[in-house]
Image 1: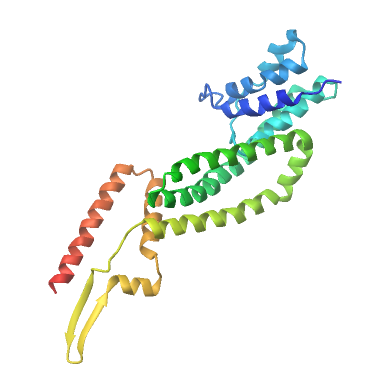
Image 2: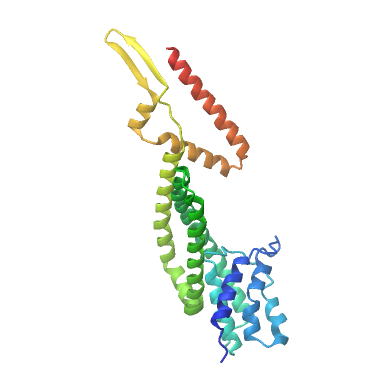
Length: 275
């Protein structure tokens, strides 16, 4: 009975990280993933069948390759192993499953990497860097890679050991979606706290004074906003920039716009001081 060695499984997992090698708009990650399965095909099939078995991977493929997308490679390796041992699994079965899973796992993997791990870790490390610590960027690179490799390896082995049925059942029950929703909330909280702590918008110098028979009335814009909703200005700034980026406004245009708004604020402060 043919069984993939631990060394081959590790090679397959690691080579999966080069999925975007030779990236092209016809097959996207197809060629890179073909390369990832060279060790698997070599170990399971005789030499005369290597080319034939590898050619089936030269199709369109696109998923998140580093965090959760590795589960697809694990399932594929398990299916190739069963196929090499004579089980009734066709090349179309393998490719069909990969095509069915690449979309959902791409979405979940992108959420984990770009919306959860990256902002939370970056928020902590940016604060260290702003405090003058060299550990900020170093810690970010080390911890980010450890998290990526750790989750990627465990996802790969989950796919290999549990097989397609377990993963499909988990996707169907919505367990992944609930977990991602909870962790995404934490990520949004971190981004919000980063906005308040690092986006400096202060209108405390903008105040208007009126004289009346009962005395002076002082209206301070910053104090009023802080009373109504603390941190509203940094939040509005971040949401505004995010919305502009979604509308494909150029970053240089956003910088110029921010500069103009800053000049207007300074002008208001000068105007308020004149009264």
